[in-house]
Image (cartoon, rainbow, N blue to C red; front, side, top):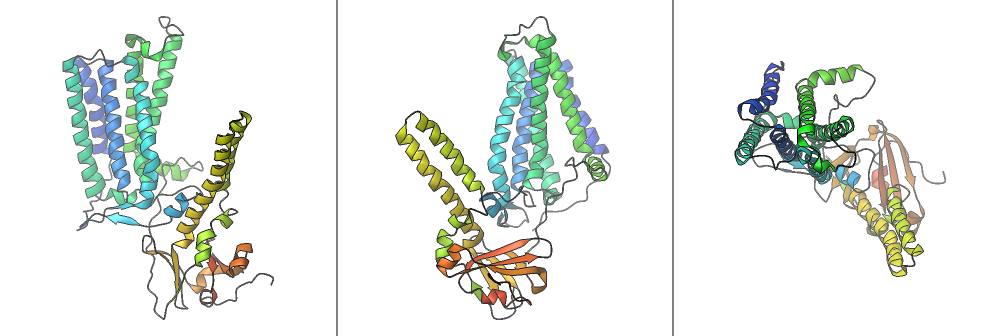
Length: 423
């Protein structure tokens, strides 16, 4: 059973009302419950933690794949996979590319949450909170958790908003919020410390007078938070503005969609895999296509050089070995993911690349899709007696089919004769 899809209201008035109420209620606590700046900043810090946690949940179940700049080593090979694990009776799934984003985003959000706390709650201190005030603040935080969880369940999952997001767009809002609050809190504390005559220049941040810093810091945080909430309400208009200008602000970014690959072939199918020896040692020869691995080796060699200057020869020799083994291992893993775990199938009318690791098709090429067809042979190909077929497509994309012992079924699929080395 798929989750329901409900059209979202075109007017932002309900969301705007929710933002006004959400930003106004904590301020009411200052008057009605006797909260001070420390209590309110503590609540805002807890709210950021709640939003970060729910952003991770939304990113985990985002319906679109994530994009990466360039084609990074190993991550790029995994990102091309459309593998996912679905939740039974729904169309919600956890994508492999989302996990790749989260393994970086979760530590970043955790560190960012800590830094925001250091320059907000850490400045005004929470030791001044009475037991009664702390109880009401925690109760308010539980209310925020319940309301945000309900909104995520109703809006993101039930209404199908997750279908329009990748892990990157799902986590972008809270990441921007956290960075803005951190920078705003830092500059507010620095500004107050500079202009206030009652604060010495050598006073640590943890010992600043909360009575002096608390109010300006609270005003700055409230203003930043309200502005970010308004930007979220009028996100559609900001996206329209982004599309109408030549400057790319990122508001109009649309994650890529997943186009299913048709793996069905009508005729007799030839199944072709790269030569076993090529799958084993082909990664090392792929250094020219993946120079990032060499950068890792150079970095480790630089560290080895530092130990060598200190005459720590044992450790320097160990690092030299690491500088050779680690890049080679990275290249081998990357190569195996891209080519070693792939099977090429053709019936003479089309070529389908099938992922043997996660299952499913990676790409499909028809004879009329190509603009250039050639066969390349490097020294490893000559040593192994194999060939590398390169197919360039109409859209500018290039597919490499390396280390094929018998490439003729692949070449016979196309209408033109391939260019061979030396011709």
